[in-house]
Image (cartoon, rainbow, N blue to C red):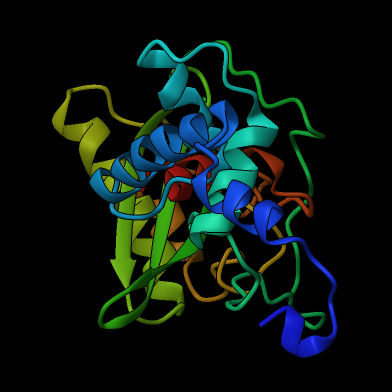
Length: 231
């Protein structure tokens, strides 16, 4: 083939190349690639470079560099699940009234049932996109309420909030009037545009500033991000 393209090469050079044993790096790459493919497969194909690298270190391969894992995964055509931007969850409504930001980024609570942060995210499933809403008590970082749906209407986030009220009431630690601040981002779903009566019935003052729908949503975004990664 080379001589057909006018490439001058001595026959001994060609046969020396054919008989050459694989280099130590090639052998090592083949061993690591098999391990990486196994880790990727048993974790449902969602592990990316960072998590595969961490799993290799847990298995005792502490001498493997992260860039090596990235190169071998790229060569093997492997990649992890990516938190893309295909779905949009927060849809601000400029015409909706927003309650005041009572937290001002101070997400640390001094006791349970003082500050709840809420957000929702989307997860790709075989049946399509599933939206999951969370409500978290920032005192213990416990998910006190959650809900899932194939749409992102108000009922999605309202159901998560109502579940939190039910959970605390069932645990004999009900929410008391005027003590709880509920913080969400500026999305139209997070604003609960039709649910002020639900807040009042649950013991959260939705008229006098007991409900906080601040514009940043940072606390809830962190929880939603962690939940998506864990899934």
